[in-house]
Length: 467
Image (cartoon, rainbow, N blue to C red; front, top):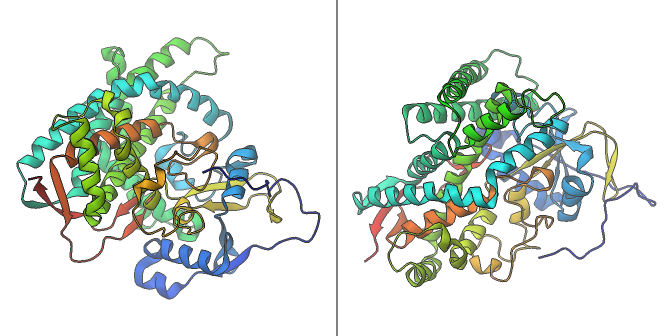
């Protein structure tokens, strides 16, 4: 799936300039559904009407730019990525909760911290964490055996499942009160911060609204929990296989070396843990929830998946060593992430003037890059709304092919993407061979755009044992 056309986005145009096409937000739709609730529909309509290079006008001069051309996205996120940062203001309040973690930081901090965190997600470490996933999958199967024939909120179950896994990976803890409290504080930060950052693009955050007060309380709670975990683990001795222990060992090894690029403060550790925790359970839970829904709507895909599981596993619980053999299972997951990408939108702010396919990018311009819209483009995916895992039968798109980028790209490619794939494959394999899930809601499930695409109102599904 490589793009073979010539690069269109290198320098100022020699001929006439091209324009960003303007789309004005439909405030009537916002009044009915809220800006967040109508955001995906409005962006989709704007792209259908005006193409890949959009200026979304809120009112007056206030607005933002949207880019959906894969080659120009590669220019912004890879070829000229040093010119594009997270920036301000749309990340201001999410940064209050996550600090300068990998999602929100820029420059030297991002580059050096990424090197440190990546050491926790090498292939060997992912295989080691796979043992936690195996245990959690077996636990989930046992739980669902006791509720077979009933209806449950599968998204809530996936949140609990991924929370159990991330608690062990990051902190070496089971589903304790601490981890549950951390989840609640993290969710409150996510929801409140993205709500504020959507309101006037974050410029109204100084007003002490109820949402701002809720964010302040959630950040204080998140701080107390994470700093408490850091202090306790340091006192106990950071000798575990979890990420917190690894970061504390890195801190201890470099604290007396003023020239080391791997020096970490307690705040640095707190920020990376807050980021990894939110990304490590919420995005994975959403990824799995949407996959269960798609399988329930496509019985032929489910049957082919179960045939592979019977051939490879024959009823036993999956192990990390089985992942390379579960080829179709991986295709199912990749196609699910095409339709409902875990990272549904990426934001960049230009540092200096640039040109994108003949269109001027002014310094300070905020640009949004929605993978959701690219993944639903019929130019790249015929019948884009159909669930067709065989799209990924021949190969997996490269990280520089921005027709498919569920985990972001460039220097901000998700460090836990390999872990998330392993977690998703083992969970699908361990559950789908024993259970068929059928959607039991009265209305179609709508994706609600937070940091991830969350199923609005949950996902009620009937859990039936495979006969």
